[in-house]
Length: 194
Image 1 (tube, rainbow, N blue to C red):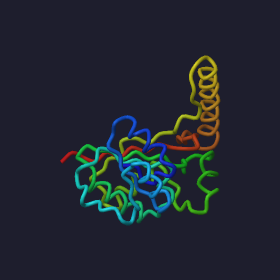
Image 2 (image 1 turned 90 degrees about the vertical axis):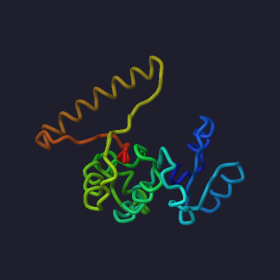
Image 3 (image 1 turned 135 degrees about the horizontal axis):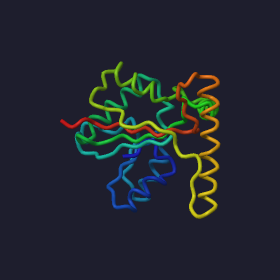
Image 4 (image 1 turned 90 degrees about the horizontal axis):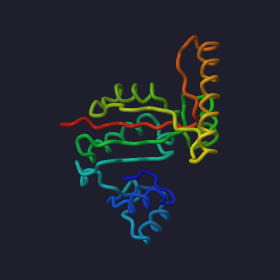
């Protein structure tokens, strides 16, 4: 399932890969377009999570979580837990609320409510009694991608610059406290096995 499927690029990729994909969206026109193209798509508020209990392997959302308050995010994760199989996962990409280079993405959109960080996600899981999930991963999204010699050189230079920047920030300002630098972060939550 993809939350906030937007233009449907991920749904198309999932379908092409042979997955049985479901899309949720708040924009009625996007749902109508997706249905016209043969996708299983629903308006978020009309979707029956209980009817899908224990049936999903993966729930993903790209640039979605930051639009929720902490309480609404906890409610969404509870719904995901209902629909996921034991051992299933949630995969989210979000502006990196812990990075000085991700905060401009967070604050540039007035519909962004919550800066998401690994520490905040751990606290949310604990405070909202979401003990059916474990925070399996929180990491910077890669800054540079691409193949070939040019891609390799970009990754090499980017890695060197990130290492130098981290060293300066960690040791000069934060006294060794780690800080992520990428604009976006990726979160993986795993539903505990029964």
